[in-house]
Image (cartoon, rainbow over all chains, first blue to last red; front, side, top):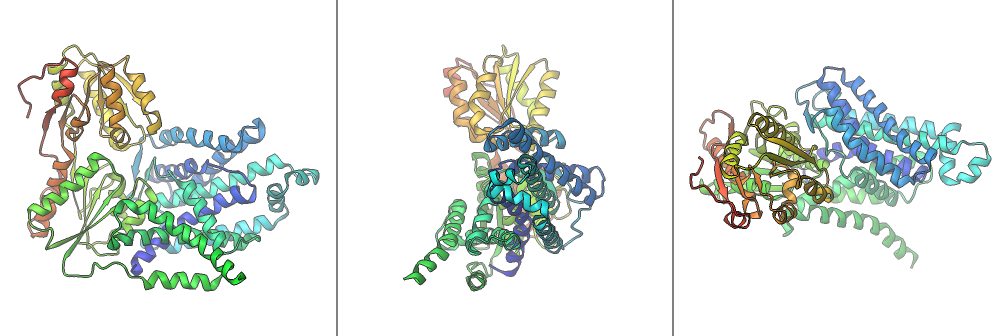
Length: 285
Length: 305
């Protein structure tokens, strides 16, 4: 891998770090298997691209994209909390509906903004994404250390006790889902702007990428319990996942086929997760 | 923990597996997903380069396939740009878009299997390409000739694919102008294909398949169901005819690839290419005799060119 490939890897890894953080909030903090993200990632991309294509300021477009994502999370939360629809199913319902809604937003499946101004001025995608990831991490750390944020974390750890302390479990769940999907939509908006287009299939597999990143990060950082290390582990996990793919892309020389990409990625990810455990076993002996 | 990270970082830079540093010109290919038409386009490019004697001695090919994942496609684009290729071949719209954004000024972007390069933002100075403008009005003529009783044309398409939507709109417009009725069925996942085609069958006399990655990937299922119901299938992609279509008129993706390969070869030999975005030059009408016999349809002898 040469340095340019490495930078490209980091760039996509940083944008998808936001997906990992979003997925972490639902899967780990409130223990809610949220599949909405496949839809909200595309929503973020769609809203940002359509607004930029119609001449809006890219920062405003990005903010509206974030708000759209939070609405998607709210719908999933509302379906689950108010109508008691299984969390997994509520997410699938919203994700499915979002496919049509995203098509409505975009009017066609692919919109290009190759020459329009985006928040990435020219060659600085990495630095701007890095700053956005850092700001998001700081804000989330602040939020989850506040009384309000602690209440949100409480409902994931023990909803019954939380309730007896007067925490509104349903409301907190919806807030966490809104937060998560807003961050994922931000990732979608950033990805679309860095690539110069939005496509309806952009969000396919987002949940898998996010979840893999979360788990890789947790394995490397040995299951962090505090919020800041946990968020940093998400970011690291996302970048490591991209590095695994970069390895897979470089693996052609040793007799592997192009079509083995997904397999090689999966194997590298599995090895990354097994190694620390092996090491632990060895040192225990 | 930090030690682990350090080891990983050392590994990343230590293993330098790209052994492409030699005298040959590098051409990268970024294909978005596997299906017969896109594979044919890639094969066509390679064939043309081989015929012009660029492969295997003068040119080295690096081929990657994003397996339908957008993030992978973007990463592949960056990965390929880092190898400083002379030409970056991209197959299908999303691959072309991610590569255009990733590439530097020195590389030339070449694309095939893109229906509307202008809407996709691909018209730039340093791009060449072959866009497939399917001959839909000619296809309608063949329908009138071969299936005089056909009144309603069913279209099976994926609203999520830009090529597919463009062709569906074009077909609807032209068919209505020619006195046909249109029945559309949208499908957005391969698990719904069966349902979508069964929904079309009672209402349509003939079913048109646009150049749609999802539909084309499920061509075997579609052909089986349609043939059982005795509804002929037609398309603009002649590579699909053997899969059970009655006929297809249009750009063969393989030929598109060959055309693009020749443009690239011209470019590499220093011949100036004009225009830099070309339309498919070949229209080919191809019938499937076996399906025609099964449906009791007489194939007209007159071939359309």
